[in-house]
Every structure is written in C-alpha cells, then in structure tokens.
Image (cartoon, rainbow over all chains, first blue to last red; front, side, top):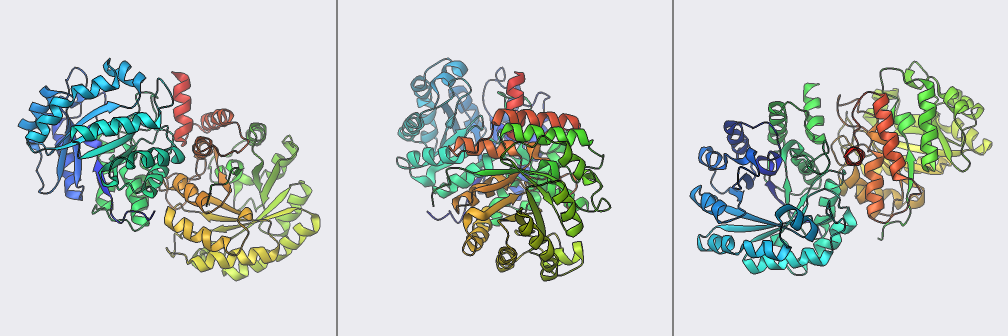
Length: 302
Length: 302
C-alpha cells in the first residue's frame, strides 16, 4: 500500500504530555503552549482533560486553559471526558471534540477503573449521545492496544472489539494506543490491519509511546497499512507511569522529521516545533527527549 | 519482500561508540566491554581502530585491547585499518576482519581526508590486497551514504559507485552508513534497493545513527529491502561530532527489542545487553541513550 500523502498530527503534549508532571505547570504556560502549537500549524490539539482533579491534579485548570487560549479558526481542540460531569464542563468550555477512553486489556480496565471493558464502554454511552446531540466530534481511545503492564499480551480481537463498540457509539475517530510503548512493527501492522478491516482507515489514529524506542518505527509500520493520523508530543513530553524515568509519548519533532523526509505533508512548521520543544523543556527544567529537536538545536548553537 | 528470519548484529560500541570520548577509557574497561559483548552472543564485534593515535587518541591502545581480550571461538573481531601501517598492526594483532572506510560524498572526502573519493579508494588497494593474501575478511564502509554535513544531499549513484569499487577490491561485506543520522525510511529503501541491485543483499549492512530519532525506523525500512546485517552500539554510545550533544549510533537494546518483537533471531541475549549498556553508561558517568535499556532497567528497579 502506498503511504498517505498527507498525515494529520494530533498534538497531545498539553494533556498526555503534562498530566503526569508532579509540579503544577502554571495555567499561563499551558495556554502559551497551546497557542504556540496552533500557531505552528497543528490541526488538532489535545488541550486538557476534564477529569476529577483528585485523579489528575495537573489537569485541574482545564476550563481556565480553554478560556484563556486564542481559538485559531479551523483547529480542533480536544479534551478528555470520562463522564457526564466532564462532558458538561467541556461543553461549557466550547471544545470541538471530546475523547472517551477505555482499555483493550481486561486486567488494565479492572485495575485502573474497577470495571470490565464492556462496563467501561457502557458508561460512555451518555457522553457519546450528548456529544452527538451537541454536534461535537467524538473520539474514542483504545489504551493498552499493543500490550498491558498487568496481563502482558492483549488479543488483537479485543482491540477490534473495542473499536467496533466505539463505532457503535458514533465515534468519528478511533485511537489505537500503545500506552506503555511495548509494541513492535509486525504487531502494529497486524493490529492496524485488523482494525481497518472493520473501521475506515481514514478514521483510525496511531498513538505510540517511545518507552522502548519503537515509536517512530511503529508509525512507519502503521503508515504502511494506510493509517494517516498520529498522536505526538513536543519534546517527547509525558513519562511512563509503569517505568519511572522511561520515555513517554513519541516526540513530535522526530515524527515530523521522518514525514518531511518522506515527502508526506502535515502543514506544520518543523522549525517552530523545535523552538516549542526547547522552550517547554526549558520551562520544565529538563533536556528535551526529542532527538531531532536536540540535534537541530545543537546545530543552531553551532 | 519478507523480512529476513535471522539478522547479524555487528556491535560497534568498542570502536565507533568510544572513539569520540574525550576522557581516555582505560584499556581494561575496553577489554571487559569486548568480553561481555562476546559472552552475550554478538557474532561480530568492531573492537578497535588501528589509526594514528594523533587522529584518534582514544583508540591508541587497539593492540593492547586485541591482546587482552578472550577470543571467543566463532566471533569475528574487526578493526579499522586506513593504511598499510594500520593493516600490519592489525595482522600482528590477529584480527579476523579489517575495515576500510571511504565517503560517498565528495565534499566529505575532500574535507576529511583531503582527497577525492576515487583517490581514497585507490589508497585502500594495498590494504585490500594484503587482507586477501592473509586470508582476512575485508569490509568496506561507505560513510555519508544518506547525507553529508558539508554538501547535504548525496546522490544514490555515488553510493552505488563506491559499493562497486569496494566489490572490485574484494570486500566481503559493504556497509551503507548514515554517518550523521539524517536519513529517513523512503531514502533508505531507495539507497538499499540501488545497492542491492549491484551487490548481493547478504553482503550489505546498514549502519544508522540515531541523531534525528530515525535509526530504528530506518532499520525497519532496510529489513524490508532484504538487508540482514546491522551495526549497533550498546547504550547508543557514540556521539555526533557534527551536532554536539546529539545522539550517536543506534542503541543495540532498542534494535534487539524490535527484532525480538518481530520474531527475528539474532542469537544475542537481550537481558545481558541491557546489563552491559547500564554498566558502561555507569562507567562513563552518563545516562544510557537506549530507551529500551532504560525502560527495562527502570522496570527491574521497580
């Protein structure tokens, strides 16, 4: 299969990238991050999470972030909404897209939210209905799709099953997420082929963590199956709660470098993204986890 | 094309990984590194460089390293030999394979060794003849095959031309080396397809640096063209002299993680390699650049 000529990058750093930061990132920094990302050309930004601040204190200021950002026309601003309370807040904040999220691993579902996969998806029904009624985009994220920290192997059929349930709920887009970064290219192809046999490939996204250094190769493998939507995070922001000190989300700069080199359009300004990655890393007082970002920055410094 | 079922990993950390270290790495550490690598199952180890100590002071103890290591039966120990002086020393050290190295970029050749590509290869003729006469394996490395820090783009035809010259010199194996890590998968395929149209794929190796985070994806792309030999370096040892502070060679652990996940055999003990990567990083007083290595080590630590 030929590669897609154009890829949509969903930038997740404001949410997935920051949510595990221990020190609270000031609201104005989050706002500046989102504004810089939209200015750089990202078509879709995961801006916040409307979850309980007890679960994720870092995301407690989601409404303030949404209220404070410049809303660039055409950009889709997404937030996570686990329940109706979150949805109502998201609606009030005038988001463009709400995201529901369940696991493909029974063990992960039980351990994380204390219910089965089927139960977790049933809980999303009112959110999905309300999103459709409000005319919002609805995205469904399938976590642990390539492996689970508790049960290890996750059957391909379980991923396809969750994808079909999301489709039945009316999801516009479905994310196949390697939450712990354990996937390798052959498995990525297998899972993506199975999912796209049931869901139009134009509605399927790949969300890969780089915990084991596989994410860029996994994106290449997914591209080869016709997937054209990927989630990335500037500077590779976002750690792995299952392996302290390990790498998190795949770095946007590394993915853009590959896509640019392969002549695949994204509409995103690579140099501006390098700047954003260096800026936010400086703010968080750490070295960027993006290899391309660091190499370009080093080259500029001479 | 189906993936190769078995891949040969050439471990280059003792040479390419260490050669740019500023502080001299004690000879006994180099010896222990080589011995640990052979014990872990690497079939081919680039153990030293017999170049002038004026050029590369870190490699001044190549003869001592070769004399001090345990020679594991079946393992091929390789060293770089730019000229007859180096070759004579390598022969005296009883190496198994000598490596000659030229660029595919005219600008790089002129700037680095002050002669044209054709002249540089002509200079290797006596080394190649002597290697063949002594019954040693001969490997030819094509540097800047995917891009050059001075001229930028390197024509595919220039890479094929150097490969054919190496073949004419009697090289048993030819390395396509992305010295500065700028290659992306589509270009890797293009170059590998062009080279393997002239050289049997079983004799072609991929040597990728991870400077821009592309190396694992580039290895996947090369595997898809039938390449089954790759150079790697534990802990990603080896920086990039053209971008200070940037990543160097692709980390062995990350590559083994991918190959294992894809069911491709290497004969190498992954867990032992994680140990070696953590040990040598500790010795050099830095964090390993291997994502898989760090994630596994973090998981072990709990």
